[in-house]
Image (cartoon, rainbow, N blue to C red; front, side, top):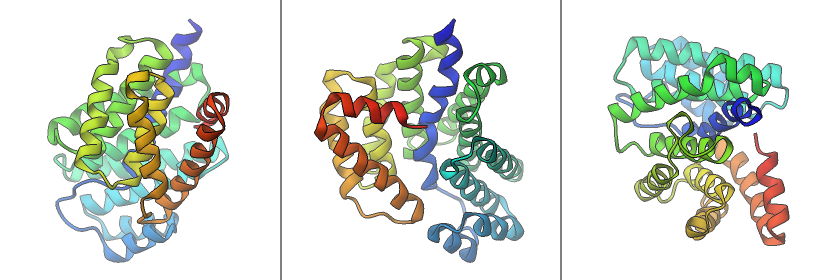
Length: 258
């Protein structure tokens, strides 16, 4: 029962990083709002994007607010931010149900909220299942979307690692394949590289460790494209240092991640 209750809070966190860089949109979002997002002014970016209206801008508002929630150290504040992001994402979906990023940002909103809840509360709230449903819908809309593949792969590996293979429909083999596809589609994407490194090394399967280390190398060496990527790269560098120290330090780093 302990594993059953703990798993949802942990497994949904795996969708974080791959969502934040954004996915394919059908129209460019508001330039001023996007510029604010790139600079790390997430509140201002969300406000400007929401004011501009339209599905792409609402998805950007969700993306910026999710980024704020991810970086927030206070659990309650993080949950509040993720809840606001979910509202933006749901509005984006209502405005354009075919926009992949609306579904992706809604999924990460649930993931962020669940990550900042107690294991029991996260289990009872069903956030993991809601995130999974949104990921499946995103993949139905765009089966080759690198962001959706990376996030789905992380979900499969974390569920299998924490709750057991097959729990909630998790399949490590699917997770490995989806990460490989995501990395092949976006080989120079820092966020996907970091997410692949973290989840593959956390799963601790010898056959994929080399892939995980290669992904970590890319996460450390690729050039950040925005403020959020810079923050993630700082974590990647600390992760790499832990790996170089040894397995005990590596596992300690992984355990400490949100």
